Length: 144
Image 1: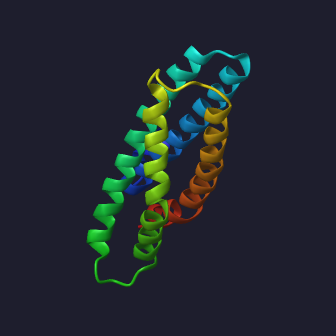
Image 2: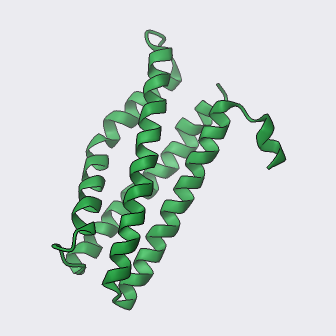
């Protein structure tokens, strides 16, 4: 905690995002456990939490990366290239994820085998995305 007093703004932002990643992973794990128990109501509650955390996380990242792109405009920097790649490659996944969370937090869609198949596919994509962010984008951001 004391060390956080000496972190730069970017370092603090990266630490916040990493904490949100841990929270997303924790919620996904809890959701899988609830699904295995057959507790659809709990699954929906966790989905709602996951939707809120994910939405806030993505909005924060988007705003910060937009700011960074403006700062690096017309500078052929590694940071700019990584951010553009991140935004372009994750755009459709982000939309798919948010639609999935929005759709399944409503009680009109069943929590069934189709749900868990889609959820597991999204989790696989997100795990790779989190690894990419933390090992590439976040490390660049921390050193600026």
